[in-house]
Structure formats: structure tokens, C-alpha cells
Image 1 (cartoon, rainbow, N blue to C red):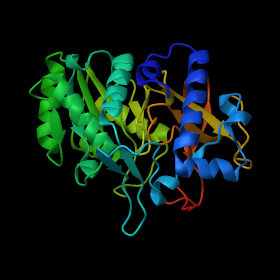
Image 2: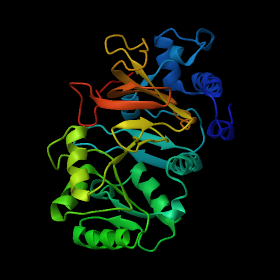
Image 3: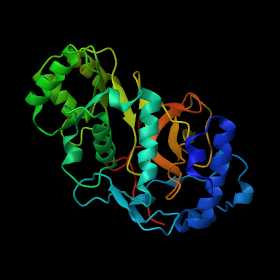
Image 4: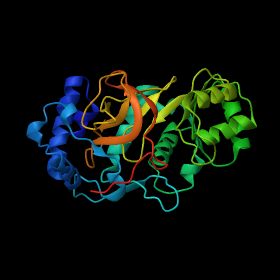
Length: 326
């Protein structure tokens, strides 16, 4: 099996391809659900010569099955949000240190040392339930920031307004990470003029507001916070890695994660860059679950590690996943 140290130190496309093929072979041999899916497609490791040949497991299987490539005990269970009665995704994590290494390295790569930031989190819909991988990550970042002002805010928007304004005025580097509807609530409460703060939205109205297209959402947030760009995070329960955007909706992956797009009419056909299709994710940090996932997001790739999200498939449930069982 490919070592995690090798995965997190990938430098070139050739190294990424080599590691991906090794992980595919390992998961084909050790993941019962993924092996059954590959068998249904008549795909064997001897048929797979490049990453475009690798089968991508529909993300819906995380709702109906335990997707594991190891018999090690589960250390952490991450679950997705969902409407009452809806099936939720479950990511059974057998080595939580891999997740910690993944998000810590990615943050350093895109933003520098977390110790330099005051981290303010406005994630009420996530805090109000258990099992959120986003809350786990942000809580760790808050602890690493070493600033006493870092922390979570639930519904205390007036307190957050005062803290954020004071920190920015003092010239402190601030990261405010929030769910879309809560950030909109904050800017409706107060008009900011921030100079030293990064605003990062994690998406989702969670049924609290009307869904907005990205451009409209970002325009409202830029105006409300007085900033020139809105950053975004692209992650999900089923992944142990995240991509980030520093504006204009273009996301960039860390070196151990890549996006491919599939033809919406033929799921086994991989599209070239700039063609809109279904988002397939390779997340090599998912070594112990499944590293090759077909999501229900729509988007297009710009390079091997840069992509845009355009929307979701029609006739999907609230998280953008059709129900499907093997």
C-alpha cells in the first residue's frame, strides 16, 4: 500500500498518477463495496492504465453501505446533514490523523501558518448537530490559532460584529469562516469595511434562505463586508480533503486531490478541460475508504488541480445525491 507520507508529498502529475493507480489496486483488493462496483463494470486492475480508466464510486453508496478498505476499528464517524427521514451519508474514519494531516497541510499551502490568524467560525447549522467533519476541522484550526479571540459563534451576531470590527481595526489577520445564510444574516445586521479579514463561505442555505447563484451570493457578501473577494471551501462528508477558492469561484486542490469531469450521458467517459460534466473526485487521503468518488455536483476543470462548480444534477435530494443501492 502506498504510504501516506508519499501521498502528502506528491509534487508532479506523474507522481499523482502513480499513487492513484497504487491506491486503486489496494482498494480494489480490500474494499468489498468498491470491488463489487468494479466487478459490475467488468473493470480489473489489469485494465486500468491511467486515472481516466479508474471507476468512480457513486457518492450515494456512503448512504447505504459502510465504505471501508480496512478492518481497523472506526475512530470517528462523520455524517452529512439531511432533512427529516432522509438518508444521510456516513464516512467511517479509521485513522483520524490522516484527516488532520490533510486539512492542516492544505491550509498551510493555501493560507500560510494558522498561528497567524484569529479564526472566527459562524457555522450554526453545523454546530447544532453531531458528526460534522467541517466542525472537526474548524475546531482544530481554532485550537492551533492560539488567539483567545478565536472561537465559534452560534446566534450571538452582535458579539461577533463587535469582535470582528475590533480585530480588523487593530490590523489583526482574521479568517471568518461561515455558512452562507449566517454570513448574510451578519451583513444585514451591520455594514462592514474590513481590510485585514478573509471571508470564507462554506456554501449552503440549509433551508434557511432562498438559494442564490454564486455570483449573487458573493456580490451581497462583498458589499456587506466591504471586501474585494469572497473565499470558498469545497469539501464534503465523504472526503478527507478540501479545495479552496480565493475568489471568482475557481477552486484549487492540494497536490493529493484532483477533479475530473464525466459525461452526464455516459458516466464512464471522462471529459476534457472546460467541458461541463459531473464532478469526479480523486482524494488520496481517502486511503481507508474510497479515493475515487462520483459526486452529484456539476462543474468543469480548468487544469489538473483547478476547477469550477456550476450546480448540481436535477432530481437530486437536498445534498445533491440520488438514492441508490448496490
